[in-house]
Structures are given as structure tokens and as C-alpha cells.
Image (tube, rainbow, N blue to C red):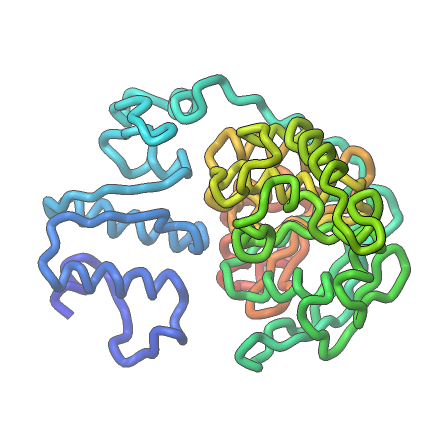
Length: 385
């Protein structure tokens, strides 16, 4: 209680950790290290799963810790947060110090250039490309979590051709289960899912993908790649039993290698050697392999989850550009991300999930960070404002 009062960190001692919000769980961790008398605190991507309001509350605590004489190291890729709470900035690029900056003497553009080694391109302004034709329709969808508890509670959602619909929300509010249900990776208990007018609610993944649905999962290393396979072999996953990659049950290595080299070049995978083992690549290049595989056959719908998690600014820029290219050619995209800046920059409309429900769907122009944050925290009453 003394630490709570001293640092303004309030938690309920009798509550179960699994029952309290992620923001409060984080405060418990901070209290633990303070109780041990720690003078140095390292925050590694501390805001990754927090709402904007929880981020503000965390930074109040961070400033109080600094005022108390604590030393803090903040590891983050979010430039606004670096500028908001630090005194000095060390920029790392390829394992080396690329710059040492004084926070009050720098800006986001200078930091980004130091991180990437060049000027960043600006995302092109959105044009209204969405048509009246829905490619994905979800009605009253319900599903259970791995623990058997309700994960989706009556979800209704539409994605149209040439439209990016962002799904915002703190992790664990049904976003992962939504993507899995669309791809046939999780059973649907109630409701329907249609793609291009065809009911895919009970379809297995292979049949769903055959209808032109591409999937970029949130964990590329576990769900998106076979890390011990080559780049070329990962490029053909899901179509390894089809010509020209296989004939009469035997893999055609020459065809696989040829297409692997072509795709590695087309999607700027580094090193551009399709024989390289994909597990040795950086996170950004691994994501390029997954994204390249999924969009190389011009899908009608892309379901993409946490597309830039763990990526540097250059790789993030690349992924964003590719998604906008797909949107421009008329592909519908369901973009699930915990990065509000990403959601707001790319989406035409934004659906907010809380406790397995879509509590609001907003036009991107109406989706301020504050409003999204309140909705993500369960304040559904703002949806009618």
C-alpha cells in the first residue's frame, strides 16, 4: 500500500491476475520490481497491448519513477512515445548504434531516418475505391476460445471489394478467433460467414483458400512458416501438391527453385537466395515471405493479423505499401492490428472489438485515437456520438 500511495499505482490485492485488465497486470509487475528495491527498470515494448488511455496512465507512472531518481530504459519502436517520456535516445540499426540523440533537440523524422538509414516515403492519401459489392459477410458469429469460454459473441462484419476494414482492440478480445473462424481453423458455434456470396462457415481451410482467401497469421514463425525449410519451399506451402510444383506425387525441384528465386526478387527478400533457410532471416524478411506467398496469386480477400509486429520501420513501410497495392486492385482486406497508428493510416473503416463483440464500426475519418481507446476499453456509449 505504501508503494501504491508513493507512486500512484492502484491495484486490488485480492483480485486474480487473469481477471484484471492488461494495464493493471502491468502495474502489478511494476510494483513487484519496486518492492524488491530495484533502481533500474527496463520497459520492453510496454505499450504493445494497452489502450491509449492506459498508455497515458503508464507514462504518468514512468515520469513519477524518474522524479524519484529511478533509472529507466524504454525499448520501443513507437516514436511518439520515445519523444514523450525520454531524455536521451539511442537508435539501433543492425545491432549497432546508429545515432545518439537528445530528445528535446530531435524529432520523429530524424529518429526514423536514423533507424532506416534513409528518408521514409509517405503513405499515399486514401482514395475511395470500395465498391458496393461485399466480398466478406459475417452474421451473428459465435465461437468458443481454447478454454471453452465464449470468444465471439454475435459478430456482424462486412468487408467490400477494394476496402480495408481494420479491427482494433486490446489483444485477447476475440480478434484471433475471428480470423481463425474465417479461415476454417476454429469451429463456428452460431452464425454464418460468406465469401463472394458463397457460404464458407463450415468449410475446411483448403476449400476456403481455394475461394481466393489469403491469410497472414499473427505469429509468422509458428503459423506462417516452416522455419527449417528454404525460402522457396515456404513460398509454395499450400500448393505443393499442384502443378507445376508437383507431378504424380513427386516435387518438381526445378520449378520450385525457379519460382522461389522470382518471388524472392519480387518481394525484396534479403538475402535474395531462395535456397536460404527461412529461420535464418530477419523478422521483416520472414514476413515478406509469408506476405509474398499469400498475395502472389491475386486473392479476393486477405485476412492479415498483426502484420508489422516485431518489424523495423523499413519493413513496416514495405508491408503497408503492399497492402495498399492489393486494395487498389480491388482486393478486400481485413486488417487486425493492435497498432492504432497502423489501423488509422490504412483503414477505410474501423471495427472495434471488446470481449468478443464489435462494439462500434467507424469511418476512418471519425476514428480519433481517444475515441478508439475508449471503445477498446469497453466504453460502448461513445459509439452513438
